[in-house]
Image (cartoon, rainbow, N blue to C red; front, side, top):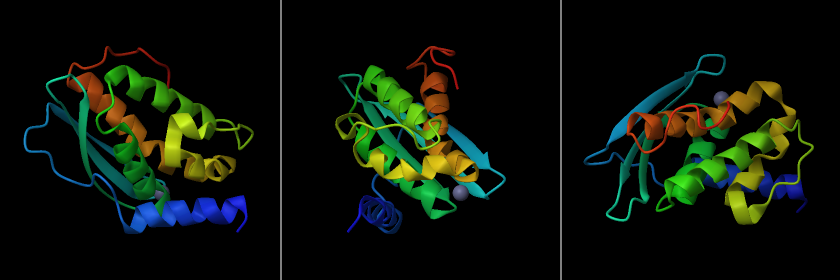
Length: 152
Ligand code: ZN
């Protein structure tokens, strides 16, 4: 199987078997983001455990790219520190804005590498970024992160 085939498998697997698609009992904040051009919706909830590590839940509907991206993100960042979530998000956003010319680091963004090919399709970049932007908003609303700490 070539790399693109493998990446498609990963995306499909997350779409069919979403990780972290749960409603939190006591979220600190949530953010609902919509991608009108595709019809994707995602609501990301955040809380923090006793160590200040992220607890993430989300609900959503839409295309396989947006929903798989939410699952990848939730799986990757569950239990991460806020600082880690910021650097992982920056790496993912940079890859999505590279027009497919980046070499993503699987050690940093895990299954997020599967979206490397999606970066070539501007219309789908928004789908992939939707949950990550919602998480950023939720982190800011929850007071976990200062606003404008990173550029969009
Ligand atoms: Zn979409």
